[in-house]
Image 1 (cartoon, rainbow, N blue to C red):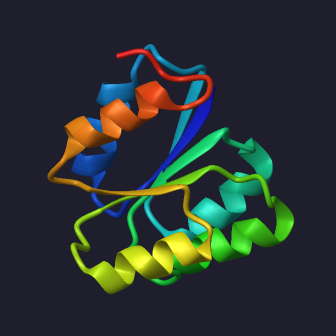
Image 2 (cartoon, rainbow, N blue to C red):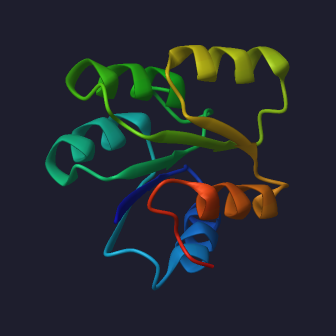
Length: 120
């Protein structure tokens, strides 16, 4: 499984990478929406874990852009945005799920229940 982590914070990318280490074939990291869009085309990850608030192109716009070329993208938001309207907008844009960064256990539980689940 190839996973893309998109977050402006290198600390958050590192934490997610460590959480996923040994559980997938390839992890690519991006710090912006523009970078995620460009790398998605070349790397074709099986799953994207993305922050909504990103410099330049935000996570929702990055998702919409990727969806134009890959309707089957699996995109999960992992964000600090604890706003019901952000959650609604993210899911309406095509996100598979939405998790707050403060609740990583819920994210791990979700990943374990996915088709082709990751093992923690």
